[in-house]
Length: 334
Image (cartoon, rainbow, N blue to C red; front, side, top):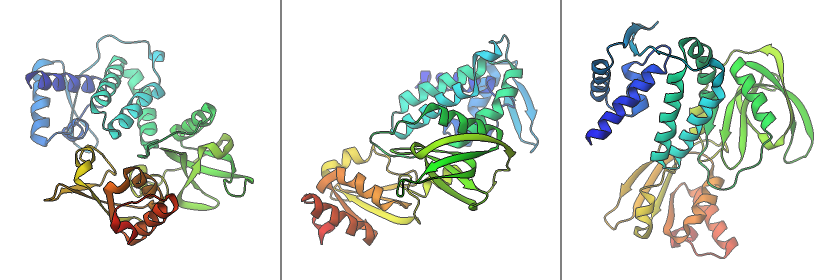
């Protein structure tokens, strides 16, 4: 336990060194998933051991602390994409409940940031923040499509610079191609990979999904755009179980005692809650859309899961059971 506390303090010191504007107590609470009191103790421990730490106040008059960098790495040795790739990989590992590996990558990203001189931090930090905001991860198991790297690179450039895109997009249903201007807001990565964008001509202020595999050509235009401050990629992704956008509903599943140990270690949705029942079964609740994707996932649990709500998902599961000739929990086919 003592070594664990020491490790966290060292990680906080690296984070303070890797931040251009320093960390506030709120930042420490969020990044290290601790209470305000623990955040204060961690900050105090760093200040005791690093007397060179600087105290400053940001534009919102919040106190922040940073450790100035002594010595520097060549500014061109690291790019915003290098750091974002590490932090995005860490998010994906954390979603898959591989917390130790996620923490290792997060720590590596902090170390890389800490090696940058202040001038490089000033240059890269806006790009890092834009890319991290743009790269959402949808919780979907299974295979992944192959996407051309030049498509991802071009979209990333447009996101960083807040530039419009021109996209030649082929409809999956009609197989016809059409061109459109888009304001790129980011990615949802899952079983299928999607660009989240708003079209100023066709659906302004309304985010839509565009399968990256269906983008035939993409180019960055000269025109810039102002991001809709009310839009959150994180909230947009949480509306759905996977990536299909439907009106969110109250979802309730009941898992049998036989799979209870596996269920408690599973993250089905960021908003989920779990209730253990007297008979050892577990009830999972969350709020999301994407019933067909839920059906695909629940099929893997076989007869050990029962859908309690909503009725529409019960019907979908019953049809799947009859189609496959597989006997799910009795309540699903009633």
